[in-house]
Length: 351
Image (cartoon, rainbow, N blue to C red):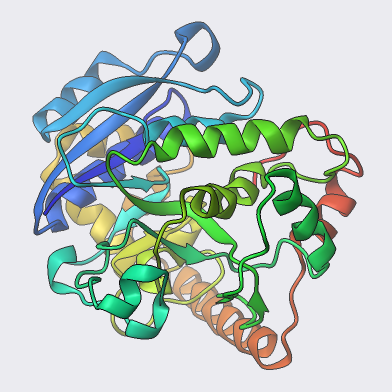
């Protein structure tokens, strides 16, 4: 099977992050694949990445293609939807948020899914052999969108769809919830028209005034709806394929894909920080960019004793907090966050 790993490469913070991601994929992927850097258009809105960045991507074998945000130009998260609509000869499209690092050798064909994690007709026939074999694969969100099932009913009613009968487990609190996924890592079968259905689902939910507090979660609200509209078999991935380093300490066995969100999360994990250093020493331009970046230069500096102690304490706190939340099912929902941050359904906040 051939895979296409695609991510947004955009002027600003995402430009350097996408370079790190591309270098890590080149270093660790062990499969038949291509990588694609998606460049948001128009440049007047999103800016133009540097010629050096494009040359760096080309040298890594990364193909660059333009994409257009069809949701709302004031909703930058909408750029990711277009990534799954690019032309590729690959069998599977795998979208990755730019603030992700591949952190160990990764051969998707050799990793079997858990039989109990597949939902749909193919699961009973035993057709799902590899971790990305299902038409749709993603990791559940670490927070619930809402505990009010009526809100989900409202969304599915908009598309004249029944509520799904199956449930997923929140990776943050172990609560059962209706299908709700983190959109940082999404694998879909090529040729389904998934991007178009996902975009259409976003647009319809966005246009429905009675559905409130939907930003910045619009993409994730529409994701299970698109799956339902296409009647896709789903493989629910575990956190090794979208590991939230900013909220969880790294386990002994490194995850395949680490979602760090902020550079301080990389710094807090010496093993992940070491990967960045190895990549920087392999690619001079990457090292130059890291050193010239206000947020990234720290990643190439030696740890001080005080820093080591501070990060060790913070890792223990994250570990304790995570397990308390799981034990007592304590978690803030997206509804609660939006009520605090927005108080209305307009405007955009980054998650």
